[in-house]
Length: 111
Image (cartoon, rainbow, N blue to C red):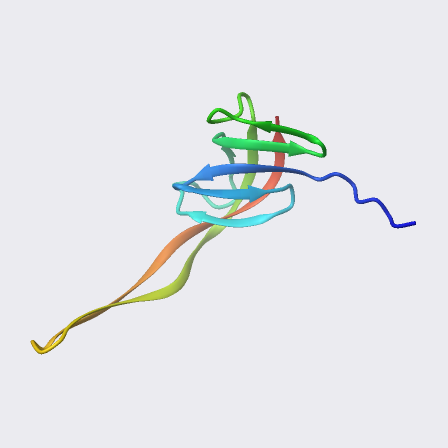
């Protein structure tokens, strides 16, 4: 007989114009947030909460739902090369960009 997996709660949150699927214990990288390292933050734009078979979808957000996360620090993403080129006119421009992100550790989902 196979072991039954314990139902895991997860949520879909929106921050920085992007959506993330999070569960307690996960670590995610989001767009830079103006918070101190080591502090806790509440993500209140929760679009969906699923707890086992019970799924609650928001219109557009779930009322009273919050995701509690701890700020682990900031970092930089991979370098993106931007190269502009026009043939026959000796026009070349090369620049790079590294996006700054904030790393969050998800502690709890309150619904």
